[in-house]
Length: 277
Image (cartoon, rainbow, N blue to C red; front, side, top):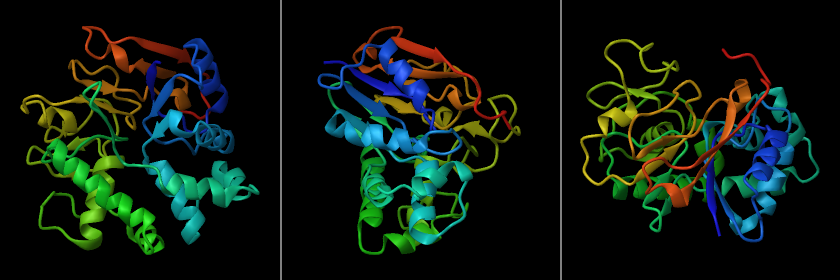
């Protein structure tokens, strides 16, 4: 049995199936770890959702910001990208969005000493804190007041972690850290608007993972979300969003190779579905 982690798909169903064929994925034997953003912008979000859902326990997909936006559009009527219309108008839409609402924010593999989220981990969090915060957010999404959370999750504040945060402030910070974060200030405050590659940001910002490198015995951290990031020169940081949507590639990493000096990557070059912004 092999396990592969795959970067942001964003509705690029044909590319996903081509990549799975390239790695000889067997749905009866192998497993997928998906870093989130299954939907939006690409042409076939509906097909991606149906395919991943039908894989059952052979696929683990964490929630990304675009996945959460689909939930907000479905349950609160929030305006959405037209590429989500086929999902919102599908006869099985409620089965699909209910399935999506129960996806985790964090995946952990003790076997591979690996942790996966969509965007990363807040600099102040250790692994136990991250797992606890993920569970809190999952409970909010799965509980009776999930619509209220989806209506109020948007916003950039609070931008600093404090264990004393409560209510929607705590949930919003957690949402932003897990699904939107790229850069942080040196004191750990999240910065939500800089999106370019390292070197393009203002001088007072650092990639979130650089603020974690002083931690000892970090697990392998797998994430997506940052299509402009490029290669990260760190043996335990694995960036998997390689810009399939924008004409880059869709990337699969074999988890069994994480302990090797050069983890095994398979990439499928992709045609752009939209022009990079």
